[in-house]
Image (cartoon, rainbow, N blue to C red; front, side):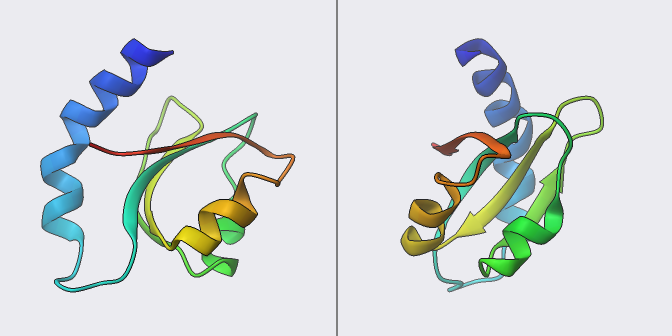
Amino acid sequence: MTSLLLILSLVTTSFAQEKSPPNSAGNTYFIAFKSKVNKNIIKNHGGEINRQYKHFPVIVAKLSEKAVTELTKNPNIAYIEKMP
């Protein structure tokens, strides 16, 4: 799984930086879902989605620390990892 995150990080780092508005609050994270991606879960916690992968249930989003704490409790989310 770590190698998958490394590959996704290399592919999306420049994309996420280009798409994020300047001075927006929060950090950028990989959010992996256990099965199907549900964008509304992220949006309902104030997340700003930067990218969704076609073949993996993973999105890249800008989140506040509070949102990360709350989302880690969601049973539909496998894990959340801060992007380098």
